[in-house]
Length: 294
Picture 1: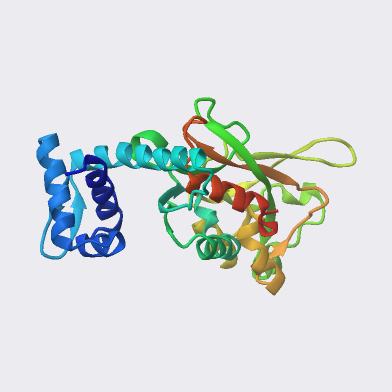
Picture 2: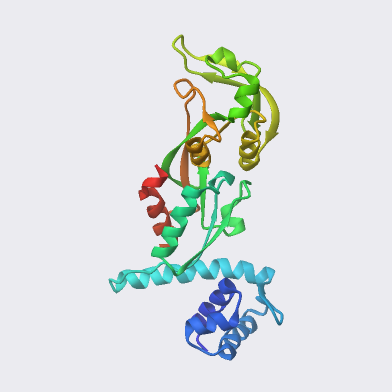
């Protein structure tokens, strides 16, 4: 039995979590697909898949083998395509991690358009907000808003990400509308926990001016800060993409844009320049070119 075919069968079963669906894709019977995986497990001397009557899942050994085998197969496909002057069709599961605030209508629209163009790619997206280890946890790609990308990884800049100071009309009516930087002193703040300190330096006509705000809520989850801002709990610094619809509808107001301009940089981060699969390359190119991401 062809070991390479068995490896392909195993990877597709692992991705789809179904022998029947994988077999249909590969135009073979479920029994033959099962035989290929069983033969692979026998050769490796370990169980790769846990099977029940209702589901298929990777064992610990299977998860390790899957990540390495998937990269090898994708790399082989690209080499064969290059030699034969063919175009590699992106396929498989793209595992992506991104900040919590990427759960917005703009990014959702970009994802929908990418998947429509490349229907063979399935998207598996982690928006937990934690800093994952791409290699150890098997992620293909990370989108990170940072000024200093990890030097051990490859980072391609995608776009700048403006952060707006926003507040709900109800909060401004209760606490007063700040007209000058001095008015911000002591004002209730919904504080992003990963930002050190409670003092902020802003540009003014007299040079940089430092203001200390009053954090009434501290969290590392931008979604919670966003919802709290909508409830009128305080003002917050949030990404433009997350609050653009709220500003347009009047649910939030963009405060003092002439003074308060924060802009981070969004990077596409991946483990190695030597290996970049078609699904990763096309996804990065797609989001970098999309005007909605600007």
